[in-house]
Length: 288
Image (cartoon, rainbow, N blue to C red; front, side, top):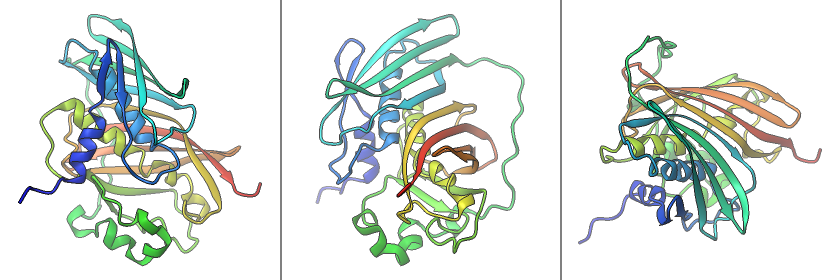
Protein backbone atom coordinates (compact mmCIF):
# COMPACT_ATOMS: atom_id res chain seq x y z
CA UNK A 1 0.00 0.00 0.00
CA UNK A 2 1.27 3.52 -0.75
CA UNK A 3 2.41 5.56 2.23
CA UNK A 4 -0.12 8.21 3.28
CA UNK A 5 1.00 11.78 2.73
CA UNK A 6 1.83 13.79 5.81
CA UNK A 7 0.32 17.25 6.36
CA UNK A 8 3.94 18.43 6.48
CA UNK A 9 4.47 17.17 2.90
CA UNK A 10 1.52 19.31 1.84
CA UNK A 11 3.07 22.34 3.55
CA UNK A 12 6.41 21.76 1.82
CA UNK A 13 4.57 21.58 -1.51
CA UNK A 14 2.63 24.73 -0.61
CA UNK A 15 5.86 26.66 -0.04
CA UNK A 16 7.40 25.35 -3.27
CA UNK A 17 6.34 28.29 -5.44
CA UNK A 18 6.48 27.88 -9.21
CA UNK A 19 8.87 30.03 -11.24
CA UNK A 20 6.92 31.28 -14.27
CA UNK A 21 9.26 34.06 -15.48
CA UNK A 22 12.42 35.81 -14.34
CA UNK A 23 11.69 37.20 -10.84
CA UNK A 24 8.03 36.08 -11.01
CA UNK A 25 6.63 33.14 -9.04
CA UNK A 26 3.21 31.61 -8.55
CA UNK A 27 1.82 30.17 -5.31
CA UNK A 28 -1.38 28.36 -4.53
CA UNK A 29 -3.55 27.92 -1.44
CA UNK A 30 -4.59 24.63 0.16
CA UNK A 31 -8.00 23.18 -0.62
CA UNK A 32 -9.57 24.27 2.66
CA UNK A 33 -12.67 26.23 3.60
CA UNK A 34 -11.13 29.59 4.45
CA UNK A 35 -12.53 33.08 4.05
CA UNK A 36 -9.05 34.45 3.34
CA UNK A 37 -5.53 33.18 2.82
CA UNK A 38 -3.59 32.46 6.03
CA UNK A 39 -1.02 35.21 6.54
CA UNK A 40 1.81 32.81 7.38
CA UNK A 41 1.30 31.11 4.02
CA UNK A 42 1.71 34.36 2.04
CA UNK A 43 4.76 35.38 4.09
CA UNK A 44 6.35 31.96 3.66
CA UNK A 45 5.74 31.84 -0.09
CA UNK A 46 7.02 35.39 -0.54
CA UNK A 47 10.18 34.54 1.40
CA UNK A 48 10.79 31.43 -0.74
CA UNK A 49 10.36 33.60 -3.84
CA UNK A 50 12.91 36.11 -2.56
CA UNK A 51 15.40 33.39 -1.59
CA UNK A 52 15.26 31.85 -5.07
CA UNK A 53 16.71 35.03 -6.55
CA UNK A 54 19.78 34.91 -4.29
CA UNK A 55 22.65 33.55 -6.39
CA UNK A 56 24.99 33.17 -3.44
CA UNK A 57 23.19 30.60 -1.29
CA UNK A 58 25.75 31.09 1.49
CA UNK A 59 23.76 34.24 2.33
CA UNK A 60 21.10 33.34 4.86
CA UNK A 61 17.90 35.24 5.61
CA UNK A 62 18.51 37.53 8.57
CA UNK A 63 15.38 39.73 8.61
CA UNK A 64 12.04 40.39 6.99
CA UNK A 65 9.43 43.12 7.24
CA UNK A 66 5.99 42.59 5.75
CA UNK A 67 2.61 44.29 5.41
CA UNK A 68 -0.71 42.57 4.81
CA UNK A 69 -2.47 45.00 2.46
CA UNK A 70 -5.65 43.14 1.45
CA UNK A 71 -7.23 39.80 2.37
CA UNK A 72 -6.00 37.03 0.07
CA UNK A 73 -8.48 35.01 -2.00
CA UNK A 74 -7.87 31.29 -1.31
CA UNK A 75 -9.61 30.29 -4.55
CA UNK A 76 -7.10 31.77 -7.01
CA UNK A 77 -3.28 31.62 -7.37
CA UNK A 78 -1.03 34.33 -5.95
CA UNK A 79 1.65 35.97 -8.12
CA UNK A 80 4.88 37.02 -6.41
CA UNK A 81 7.04 39.66 -8.14
CA UNK A 82 10.58 39.98 -6.77
CA UNK A 83 12.59 43.19 -7.08
CA UNK A 84 16.34 42.65 -6.67
CA UNK A 85 17.07 45.87 -4.81
CA UNK A 86 20.75 45.26 -4.06
CA UNK A 87 23.50 42.66 -4.03
CA UNK A 88 26.44 43.97 -2.02
CA UNK A 89 29.60 42.37 -0.69
CA UNK A 90 27.88 40.99 2.41
CA UNK A 91 24.15 41.76 2.10
CA UNK A 92 21.43 41.19 -0.49
CA UNK A 93 18.06 42.93 -0.30
CA UNK A 94 14.84 41.87 -1.98
CA UNK A 95 11.36 43.35 -2.20
CA UNK A 96 8.41 41.08 -2.98
CA UNK A 97 4.83 42.03 -3.80
CA UNK A 98 2.00 39.49 -3.88
CA UNK A 99 -0.77 40.13 -6.41
CA UNK A 100 -4.31 38.81 -6.85
CA UNK A 101 -7.05 40.16 -9.13
CA UNK A 102 -4.62 42.83 -10.34
CA UNK A 103 -4.11 44.29 -6.86
CA UNK A 104 -1.33 44.05 -4.28
CA UNK A 105 -2.42 41.98 -1.27
CA UNK A 106 0.94 41.78 0.54
CA UNK A 107 4.44 43.18 0.37
CA UNK A 108 7.67 42.01 1.96
CA UNK A 109 11.22 43.25 2.18
CA UNK A 110 13.86 40.70 3.15
CA UNK A 111 17.59 40.97 3.77
CA UNK A 112 20.17 38.21 3.35
CA UNK A 113 23.59 38.24 5.01
CA UNK A 114 26.76 36.21 4.49
CA UNK A 115 27.73 34.60 7.80
CA UNK A 116 30.58 36.33 9.62
CA UNK A 117 31.98 36.34 13.18
CA UNK A 118 31.12 39.04 15.72
CA UNK A 119 29.99 39.81 19.27
CA UNK A 120 27.57 37.40 20.89
CA UNK A 121 24.80 38.06 23.45
CA UNK A 122 21.17 37.00 23.84
CA UNK A 123 18.19 37.11 26.17
CA UNK A 124 17.99 34.07 28.43
CA UNK A 125 15.49 31.38 27.61
CA UNK A 126 12.62 31.20 30.15
CA UNK A 127 13.38 28.70 32.90
CA UNK A 128 11.16 26.05 34.42
CA UNK A 129 9.27 25.35 31.20
CA UNK A 130 7.82 21.81 30.99
CA UNK A 131 9.19 19.55 28.29
CA UNK A 132 7.01 19.46 25.16
CA UNK A 133 6.58 15.68 25.44
CA UNK A 134 4.85 16.18 28.80
CA UNK A 135 2.22 18.48 27.28
CA UNK A 136 -0.92 17.42 25.36
CA UNK A 137 -1.02 17.84 21.59
CA UNK A 138 -3.54 20.16 19.95
CA UNK A 139 -6.39 17.68 19.59
CA UNK A 140 -6.07 16.43 23.16
CA UNK A 141 -5.91 19.96 24.56
CA UNK A 142 -8.79 21.27 22.49
CA UNK A 143 -11.07 18.23 22.74
CA UNK A 144 -13.41 19.98 25.23
CA UNK A 145 -13.94 22.70 22.59
CA UNK A 146 -14.42 20.34 19.64
CA UNK A 147 -17.95 21.49 18.84
CA UNK A 148 -17.00 25.15 19.22
CA UNK A 149 -14.10 24.75 16.78
CA UNK A 150 -16.11 22.82 14.17
CA UNK A 151 -14.19 21.34 11.22
CA UNK A 152 -11.15 23.41 12.20
CA UNK A 153 -10.60 20.91 15.02
CA UNK A 154 -10.08 17.98 12.60
CA UNK A 155 -8.02 19.87 10.03
CA UNK A 156 -4.60 18.24 9.36
CA UNK A 157 -1.80 20.19 11.04
CA UNK A 158 1.74 20.28 9.70
CA UNK A 159 2.91 22.17 12.80
CA UNK A 160 2.74 20.45 16.18
CA UNK A 161 1.94 23.10 18.83
CA UNK A 162 1.96 22.38 22.57
CA UNK A 163 0.62 25.11 24.87
CA UNK A 164 2.72 25.56 28.01
CA UNK A 165 0.17 27.81 29.72
CA UNK A 166 -3.60 27.42 29.93
CA UNK A 167 -5.06 26.93 26.48
CA UNK A 168 -6.37 30.13 24.84
CA UNK A 169 -10.02 29.06 25.03
CA UNK A 170 -10.35 28.46 28.79
CA UNK A 171 -8.84 31.41 30.61
CA UNK A 172 -11.92 31.81 32.82
CA UNK A 173 -11.59 35.60 32.55
CA UNK A 174 -8.12 35.67 34.08
CA UNK A 175 -5.94 38.16 32.20
CA UNK A 176 -2.39 37.19 31.31
CA UNK A 177 0.38 39.19 29.67
CA UNK A 178 1.78 36.44 27.47
CA UNK A 179 1.88 32.80 26.53
CA UNK A 180 4.46 30.17 25.66
CA UNK A 181 4.15 27.33 23.21
CA UNK A 182 6.46 24.61 22.00
CA UNK A 183 6.26 24.13 18.24
CA UNK A 184 7.90 22.06 15.53
CA UNK A 185 7.22 20.74 12.05
CA UNK A 186 5.36 17.46 12.47
CA UNK A 187 7.90 15.27 10.67
CA UNK A 188 11.47 15.29 9.40
CA UNK A 189 12.50 18.02 6.94
CA UNK A 190 15.25 18.11 4.29
CA UNK A 191 18.47 19.89 5.23
CA UNK A 192 17.54 23.11 3.40
CA UNK A 193 18.04 26.17 5.68
CA UNK A 194 15.69 28.28 3.53
CA UNK A 195 12.89 25.73 3.98
CA UNK A 196 13.40 25.66 7.76
CA UNK A 197 13.33 29.47 7.87
CA UNK A 198 10.17 29.66 5.76
CA UNK A 199 8.36 27.04 7.85
CA UNK A 200 9.14 28.94 11.05
CA UNK A 201 7.92 32.11 9.32
CA UNK A 202 4.68 30.26 8.50
CA UNK A 203 4.33 28.99 12.09
CA UNK A 204 5.19 32.33 13.73
CA UNK A 205 1.85 33.77 12.57
CA UNK A 206 -0.26 31.03 14.16
CA UNK A 207 -0.48 32.22 17.78
CA UNK A 208 1.21 35.62 18.09
CA UNK A 209 -1.71 38.00 17.47
CA UNK A 210 -3.89 35.97 19.86
CA UNK A 211 -1.38 36.99 22.56
CA UNK A 212 -2.52 40.62 22.29
CA UNK A 213 -5.96 39.54 23.60
CA UNK A 214 -4.66 37.88 26.75
CA UNK A 215 -4.56 40.98 29.02
CA UNK A 216 -8.27 41.45 28.28
CA UNK A 217 -9.25 37.92 29.25
CA UNK A 218 -10.97 37.16 25.96
CA UNK A 219 -10.24 34.66 23.18
CA UNK A 220 -10.32 34.84 19.42
CA UNK A 221 -13.22 32.36 19.31
CA UNK A 222 -15.40 34.36 21.72
CA UNK A 223 -16.97 36.32 18.87
CA UNK A 224 -16.18 39.62 20.61
CA UNK A 225 -13.48 40.86 18.24
CA UNK A 226 -12.59 40.97 14.55
CA UNK A 227 -8.89 40.24 14.00
CA UNK A 228 -6.49 40.37 11.05
CA UNK A 229 -2.73 40.71 10.68
CA UNK A 230 -1.48 44.13 9.57
CA UNK A 231 2.29 43.74 9.61
CA UNK A 232 4.90 41.19 10.62
CA UNK A 233 8.64 41.47 11.27
CA UNK A 234 11.24 38.81 12.03
CA UNK A 235 14.97 38.71 12.74
CA UNK A 236 16.90 35.44 12.47
CA UNK A 237 19.81 35.32 14.89
CA UNK A 238 21.16 31.78 15.15
CA UNK A 239 20.79 28.43 13.37
CA UNK A 240 17.81 26.19 14.10
CA UNK A 241 15.85 23.31 12.65
CA UNK A 242 12.10 23.70 12.26
CA UNK A 243 11.61 19.97 12.82
CA UNK A 244 13.16 20.20 16.30
CA UNK A 245 11.21 21.60 19.26
CA UNK A 246 11.30 25.40 19.50
CA UNK A 247 9.98 27.43 22.43
CA UNK A 248 7.95 30.47 21.33
CA UNK A 249 7.83 32.94 24.25
CA UNK A 250 5.18 35.56 23.38
CA UNK A 251 4.05 38.71 25.15
CA UNK A 252 1.41 41.38 24.63
CA UNK A 253 2.99 44.83 24.18
CA UNK A 254 0.09 47.21 23.51
CA UNK A 255 -3.56 47.35 22.47
CA UNK A 256 -5.09 50.67 21.41
CA UNK A 257 -7.03 52.32 18.57
CA UNK A 258 -8.34 48.94 17.32
CA UNK A 259 -4.79 47.58 16.96
CA UNK A 260 -2.78 45.14 19.00
CA UNK A 261 0.99 44.65 19.11
CA UNK A 262 2.65 41.46 20.32
CA UNK A 263 6.22 40.21 20.30
CA UNK A 264 7.94 36.88 20.68
CA UNK A 265 11.31 35.19 21.02
CA UNK A 266 11.91 31.73 19.60
CA UNK A 267 14.48 29.52 21.35
CA UNK A 268 15.97 26.18 20.44
CA UNK A 269 15.60 23.49 23.06
CA UNK A 270 19.20 23.97 24.23
CA UNK A 271 18.52 27.66 24.99
CA UNK A 272 19.86 29.35 21.88
CA UNK A 273 17.82 32.42 20.89
CA UNK A 274 17.06 31.75 17.23
CA UNK A 275 14.43 34.30 16.14
CA UNK A 276 12.73 37.53 17.26
CA UNK A 277 9.20 38.31 16.03
CA UNK A 278 6.91 41.36 16.27
CA UNK A 279 3.42 41.58 14.82
CA UNK A 280 0.66 44.19 14.80
CA UNK A 281 -2.92 43.34 13.92
CA UNK A 282 -6.40 44.72 13.71
CA UNK A 283 -8.40 44.01 16.87
CA UNK A 284 -11.79 45.60 16.37
CA UNK A 285 -14.48 45.09 19.01
CA UNK A 286 -17.56 43.71 17.29
CA UNK A 287 -20.51 46.11 17.36
CA UNK A 288 -18.42 49.23 17.94
